[in-house]
Structure formats: C-alpha cells, structure tokens
Image (cartoon, rainbow, N blue to C red; front, side, top):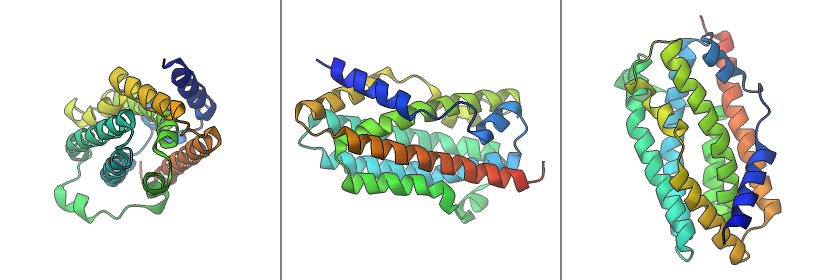
Length: 225
C-alpha cells in the first residue's frame, strides 16, 4: 500500500509550490531578455550545487541503510546528480566559458545557501522527512528546467547538447517518483515521518531556492544586455 505516501507527497508539493510568476529570472530567460552573462553564471553556480548535492545524497543513502527503499532513493538521486554534472560541461561551453574561467569562478553566497541547507539536512534530518521535502522542491525545479531548456534553444540559439543539463532535470522521471513514494511509505510505516518537520524542511528548501534565483536576477539587472 503506497496510496498514503502518494497523497502526502502530492499534497506537500502543492502546498510548497512557488506562486506562478514569482521567479523573475526564469521569466526573463523564457522571454529572451536575460543576459548571456547570467546564463553563464547560472551554469557556473550549478556546477558547485550539483557536486555538493551529490555528496549529500550519498550521505543520506548511507544513513538510510536500515531502510532499503530510502537508501535506494538517495543512491539513485546521487547517480542522477553525477549524470547531470557530466552534461553541464556542454552548457558551460555553450555559454562561452572555458576551463580556466570555470575553475576561477567564485560562487555567490545567495546561490550556495541551497546546497548548504541540503548538506545540513543530510547530517541532521530524518531521511524520510528529507525525502518529502526534496520531492516538493524537485517538482518546481523540473518545471524551471523545462522552461529554460526551451528558451535556450528558441531565444538564445543553443545546440541540443548545450541544453542537456536542463533537459535532464526537465524529463519526467516516473521511476524516481515511484522510489520516492516507496521510501516515504517505508518511513510512514515505521513512524519516521514527522510532517511538521518535513514541511519545515520543504519550506526552507523552497526559500533557499528562491534566494538562488533572486541572487541571479539581481546580477542580471546590473549586467549589460
């Protein structure tokens, strides 16, 4: 029986979904008015975020070794981050960034607060609660990536390979969704899910996600177009 977990995840994702139109940078990218500079910064920041999140998910998988479904979910998520990181190189090149520039880049605190909090959750949060919070966040992130991938092609002339990073997260992932449902149901059955905590984790994740986009939007506002 996984219906309880499905309903919980759907309700949490809906409750924590960002209001439409609040992400001004994604809207600017969709319209083609965002600068190419900020596109590069977005990719550079993601390079640090994805690497950090991969290690956080690996740690969560280890912490969940007594819960097979949870361990499998986080191991899959870590593998996904590794695959995404492999695709990011083409995006960086599509933004005109070479290896020297990429390595020299200094990430911004407002963008890196998100992976810092994911790391905190990996150390302190119950894996089942963290799974609920991350599921809600990934729903919004996937929608943003789909919009960006389409705009990079239509508005900025990016080749398919350079859009691969965003395509990866934009694609439906029914197998991962099923794993999340199984992991959360496992947590529910064992009494590990505390909804107050899961919602708090999700709310903070969404707030740090919003901070990420607002930090980039502020840079875009001051960049030459």
